[in-house]
Amino acid sequence: MTKLIHYRNKCIGCGICYEHQPELWRMSGKDGKATLLHSTAKKDVFVLQVSNLYKIKTQEVAGACPVKIIKIV
Ligand code: SF4
Image 1: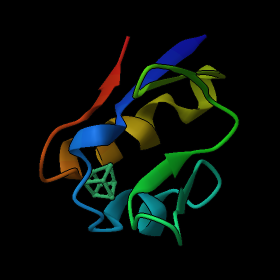
Image 2: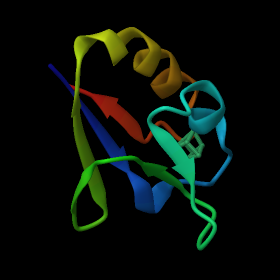
Image 3: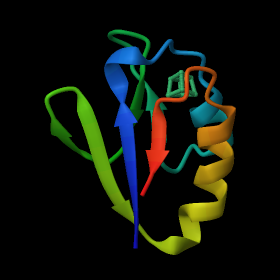
């Protein structure tokens, strides 16, 4: 399994994660930030366990995030 961590409070709402991986991300209509679907929140840090099938694609998305707030562990 792969764990995705999204530091949502630093999101600038550029939408790149959603464009590249719509199966995991949505853009919030409320605050314009990205939301990691099905994740659990600890304060403003969102965590999601996903199959390793998502790992390579998510690494691309994490690399493309302009503020580098998507981490993979
Ligand atoms: S790519 Fe990064 S900054 Fe852009 S919407 Fe996604 S999480 Fe936010």
